[in-house]
Image 1 (cartoon, rainbow, N blue to C red):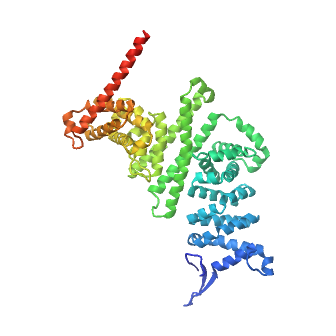
Image 2: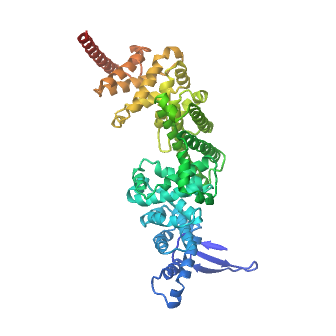
Image 3: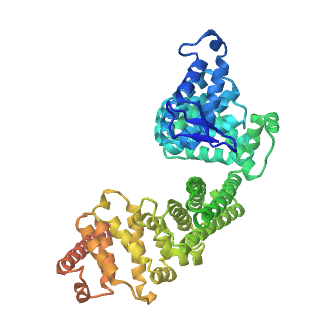
Length: 576
């Protein structure tokens, strides 16, 4: 049987226990300690004092020491120890001088297991030149080999633990080389690792800090990496799983020419189809892990985090397609028709409808389970809001059922649903232009969330952050709602609007912007139209001083209107 201690020290970390079934005593033999491992490593690396016989067998000692380390690192308690982390620089030094594939593969395995078990391992790997290692070594291994797969997962681990902007700044050339290597694997692999390569490429190339790596990629001798990416996308989405031999026979030039014939619209459809399927699978798996599988397992929690990261990548692809389609819809129809046919556009919109429908079903499931907090939920609201901003009547019934819940979702580190409300404002601003949209807000009580959002946006704390777009959308939504109040015939919470009056008064008083004064005055006038001074003064959060302040705002608004009218009159007189 085995026994191990938590740390690697002078006491043996691994021991054999020998016993017979009839014995009453047990014998323990210490097998390997840290000092012995250091001796093996030093001998294998030609360091320290070694006799001639050991010097002749350096390769054997080196292989043995690395094999033992790789075996120990499979035990999490040992892999996470400081002693194992301290050996990372030695392993990197070995890898820089060795070319034996078996030895290098075991070195990669050691680095991956230790870095996974201890965050200090990732930092030590990075500071000791891990990016240089990946950039120079991965290209020497056969495509699809186990060593390449380990290298990709090691790179994925570095990305998950360290800010990409730091890696971009410190290792732009190495990062671009790794991207090119992974792009090739994305083209030639035909298993689950192909999607891992896609996630890595998306994480690097579509991040907000990707300008540096883009520049480095442009400086490379050829742009074959971009061709590999196109090959990978087409292979996945059209299910063209050709062999590596076929790719080599056809050659990159022929492939590039064939890919140039693909229309932009077809590529969008292919990417959308891939993302749609992946979103559906990931949401289904997340739902199972969160609501049906055991919640006590550490591996379950890690699986949830991994799928949430992958979901973010898939959502980002869908969101980019939404932005592309919205850009086309804003252009001249004849110009759009030359790029995307009406038939293709219909297919894209149908695919987006289906994807958002799946997202809303996931949110419905979360609502049933009483869950309102989570980055996956917030990301789901964001992608739904992005699409509904362009197609506000899509999934109308489902959105109407969920609207109050959608406006109550918080991110993992948030204390209020502020972001969720902001994501949904573009859609709400459009739907409240009709009576039905206003009724949905009134019946669900969701109008309170919009009012709370506007109060926060115009509060003194938030005014330091420029978010004029969200403020304008929130104001327009509330104005639409108040203008149709008499058609709604649903009792509203007056205290909500009293707080809004106070916030608008403070906002307008401290601003000299005429547009802000007139917007605040317009909303105040609509609220006054449905109440009275007496009712307001009876409210505990309202007093005569606040009432006078509101009147001052409205007076300033009327003065501005008078000035505008005078200017218009003068211009008209001058033109006669």
